[in-house]
Length: 579
Image (cartoon, rainbow, N blue to C red; front, side, top):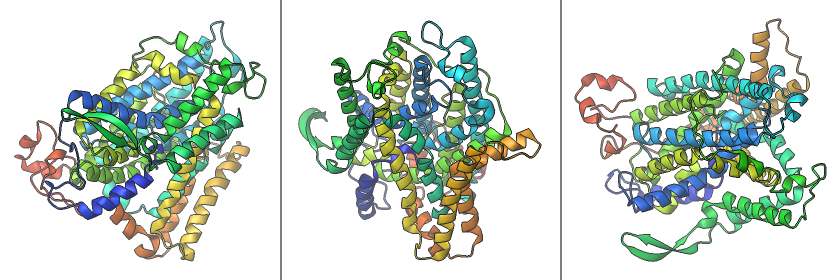
């Protein structure tokens, strides 16, 4: 799957890709771009904190969007305390996974956060009859405005089902990484498999965006317009800032609009909603149109949330496991796995490192599997994956230091411990969130279709595979949602498994795309697989020259003395790695 973090880095990646292709040399001592701090450099502590906070801001939109989307299918749309806890938990786990990935995973400066590839199967699972919200759950509150004990158990049982599915499905990602079999899987995956899968992730979430925008279209359109202006029309305008670098103050121009378009757009719309609320321009009657745009609706979330909230494993109870949920979640895990490999190569180029060797790739995918398992154990309702938006920022800031990203991981953990910090985001008005969703989900769909640049679209074979896979990914799930009892084999567990798989749009489209692309005769050039794999791998690695940045800390010098380590796919061995 193509994560939400890819949204506004396309132009940046293109510019840095051209620069990289011209300057990238075999010798690691000459990095692909001129960096202020390369991957192994250690900037001063104050710069680490500032740059880490920037990475946090870049990941902000993608991370907070996930709990806000999950709130409704989990039936906690009106429970601000629960939404605050979910936000704190996903920030906390993202920080842990970032530190693990940058320390013993690929060791590249990659931030880990929630993934939209798991949202679609999660919604499909929670759409089963036994997990659907009942009207009594939505409106049954006690005197303090929080859910009653009975309702707490009801939503937590839904969360435990999602937790169990993520934990078991992530074992596949862990196995593919640490066993080295991810290379075998990629032989059967091409642009005609990826394009419908990613595109349908964005298209399947249109209903969520429509509901929130519909609460006040004026504010939603304002948010959309601001994000478009900042990300497209003002993206090349650099704002002069006074910075302190290497012992002296200097004025440096900074591409603020290119880096923070979503944050700036949301904050300005949020501010306008606050002003309209303060002067009572927006209706105060909950039944009136536009009431959802007020900023004082959920202020109780800040008052009722504790100052400190420590997320802990199993905080929602023991995860439950069912075959239907696990299989549905597996499709999202596979999508996230495939896309992350391309992120590793891009990150290596922009951080001044040689292309990652095989053992680093395997370890990175395996560590993402561990990250998803930790997310399932803690109960974020989601997994974790690499954030490409933060990777693109490396080329802009010219800082590829691993230490900066590890500091960002610590920052995510610390902020995840403040309950009131997570509660602040609950006060964002629904139409502002809807405007953000409109732009982000639309870009996810467009980025999915961009994979077709490698495919021969003059081929009737390719047009058939693309059209059928896309259309079936829309038709079959929609029909089953309208006819929930259509699948009846007499075995309840089998009925649920088939229903979850066939109502997950990305699975249906991706399955038909992969199956038809691998069975209908066609050359590699026609299918686009040759060019796609070449682009993904970004050329040959530099062998063992300068690849100490991928070595495991403290233990690599001992591992290289052991001949048997060459047979362990995720360990650095004495021999050269080949891609």
